[in-house]
View 1 (spheres, helix red, strand yellow):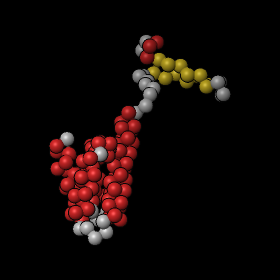
View 2 (cartoon, helix red, strand yellow):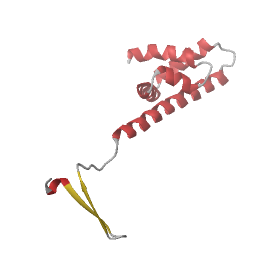
View 3 (tube, helix red, strand yellow):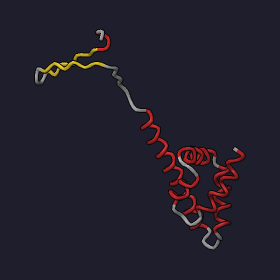
View 4 (spheres, helix red, strand yellow):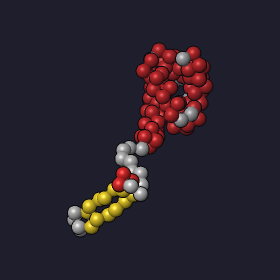
Length: 121
């Protein structure tokens, strides 16, 4: 073992000397950050979609789920920022995870419609 592989740490509080050998790395586990960011993207996309569906349900209370879904898909298609958040959310999880996270009766119809819009993207 050479001196490059050995690291000496001094614990000044107790006066102990700790000799360690091996490879040591410092930094951040990027896999954990990516997982957190992915979860946040999925959660944000679901929140945005649920807010949109709730608003449309309030504005058009007599419309069928398919009609509300079509209106929501049109809104997504006209809003590049919302579309991008949904794309990031889907990439972070899946359409199934997104649908489950939305928790709205129109979600299933919306997901099917938005799949078609995203195919164009």
